[in-house]
Length: 523
Image (cartoon, rainbow, N blue to C red; front, side, top):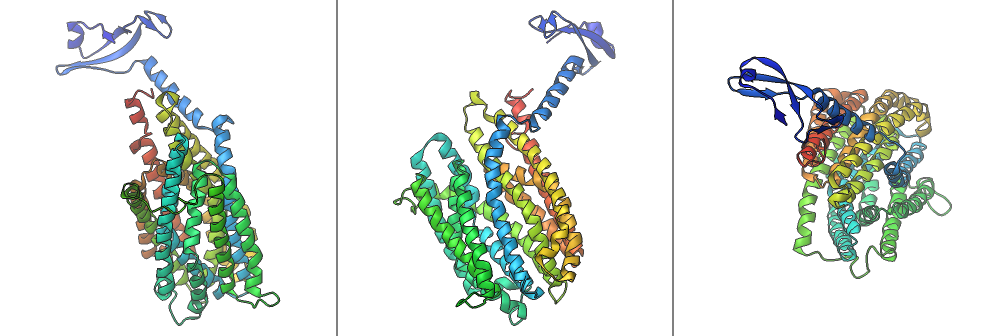
């Protein structure tokens, strides 16, 4: 831009001057002149934006906001195509978990329900703390699939399964040999009635560490290739097996003796073994792996990224599960009868029914972000990935709000999980608090899923660590003395995760507007 400034212009304080574009042509025609403001001082001349420039930028910002809203276009169709089967897949798991709670609750003993919830929490925390592979495999497989590199695809899956078996062995030995130590983490002490109920459940579940973690690798491999129907079919089969076996093993049938809480663990173990076998066979059948490379000893060059990324994922998982274990410990310590712990178990299951829908949406970000970034620059590249991310965040917000409303409507169904009135009453207000936070959960989960797609595992670990630390401090400072306070802690926990994940997308990450502007990709 050439400025028409005279010496006298610069000597005066504030003047209105005229400018023209270097080409002499503007959007409204040739040689159109506009007004801008020049502040002159002895140190130089400062030029502010013209009104047309400001209006253009404001229009661009509004355009970006409109583009982020769901519009029923091709991008929405792709998101729905990946999300809906994932929802069905993920919904089956908490629904079956709810079936476990239902049948154990039918025993009419709050201590049994609390023991099952505590042991399941310990197993899940241990499993997801060491099970870092799914977070790594999905974006790696997505990149290899987008590039059409079959050899790299086979090698990555085979190496991931090898690492999964090693990690599974470590988990199995740790849990099976030290049940008293791991149950002590949540306040279940040896010699108590609750320990006697929880220990057999935990020991049986520990035997399925290897098949369970191999199945998660298979699930992630299919998702990375955008095959969402195969995992859905496998999950339906395995969870149906669990549901059928639950009442048989818990209450007995014919020659099968009633096993109570232990029977619920045995039913789950059978379904996990069936899942491992199904994924292994179908990965070979569909060309994702070969029997010769299904379990492949990785070279150091390929192992190093898994270990580095895995360390960050494990730190994140450790922080997340330390926070959740602190919550479980607080609920178990509230009363010796187990009423509050039982109420918390039911509230968590209700919350998860909605939470897994949002988790399924977050996995769409984990797939689409690396897939879109792998495109050539002329096909969209960074800017296309930015639009995908913005659209996913809006999906997360809208779906979270809808699910929160549905969860409120489901609160009268608390009696479905247990006939004990005291447990139902204790769960009512926490269930409302859990429902009210689904809106922020939707955005937070999606933003974190996109960070996984960027393979920003280190930053994600730091974010989760800070959120978990805040949760544990809030519990220790007195909020952990009641169920209402505990669910208030979850607001703090997920609120911090939301803020930090959005900071990555809009400010600190590779799709931040300022970075795209620096590359000339955004106005």
